[in-house]
Image (cartoon, rainbow, N blue to C red; front, side, top):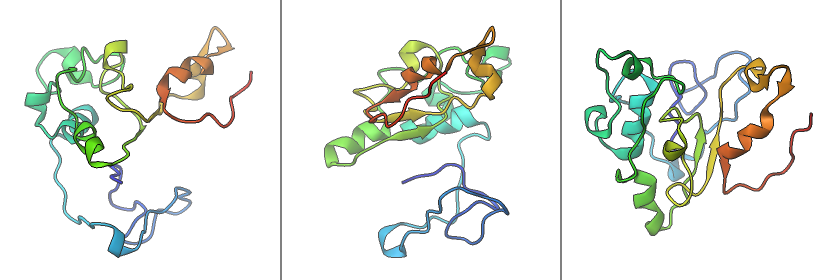
Length: 163
């Protein structure tokens, strides 16, 4: 498991979590994990850094890099133009033939247009988090959570939300 959200004050092997933190801990027995205590990032922004984690390539090579163009500098799903190209080989695709079961859980932020969304067969198990405030999931006062179904692939739905 790789979690890209660890940092100072986060839960984990290095010590205590922030007060009131309710996230599950990932303090697995050290015989089952590789503990990497130093880290580097390809970019300080989320989209280019995520693309680098998935492709193993620097942002200038994987398509997520900064220019003076507003749409490239915004890095919000609504303003990203493009995404990871289909011809780009993803690390989960390389690991699958070796028997690894891969899943992407969390925000995507690597292109919001249909052709750039994570989906089978490239990423067979996906749980995307929209990361929008609840009011953003309403349109003219009507709940829009059914639209979020397109974020799930390869998971058994245990319970559906009702209006």
